[in-house]
Length: 156
Image 1 (cartoon, rainbow, N blue to C red):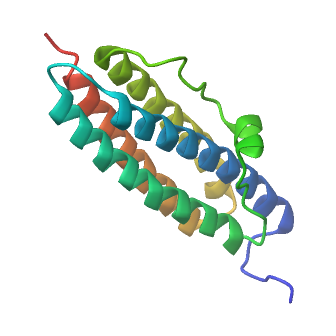
Image 2 (cartoon, one colour; image 1 turned 90 degrees about the vertical axis):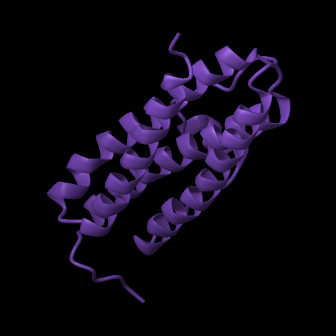
Image 3 (cartoon, rainbow, N blue to C red; image 1 turned 120 degrees about the vertical axis):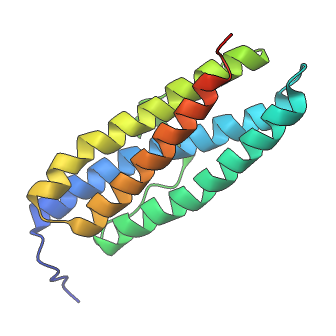
């Protein structure tokens, strides 16, 4: 059955493409955060282990919301490492960094997701796609707060 939600097919395609990039960045950040949760060591182990766990659990829910929005626009959601590697703006970490470098990398990852989300907002706004705008706003709020909290751990 054809879709008739008041957004033309070209705009839906552009929004879905942007959301696919957001999904890839979010999944890459999820995987990096989970990796760091498993491998963090040092005097802040317990704090970081628990913080990273909360962050990857939140990201696990987020990737589902993003992929469901792509599907609601009637486009397939990317779901393989190969697709995510093509779409993400992020690089995976090399090796196991120390705790401070993990925090720095996660700040950069949070900021990358924010920039990707922000880049989609004008397209969704032009198409009057309020559900996508709402999703983007919520994602930016979460990632900005998380980046701030991580940055605060780097203060001396």
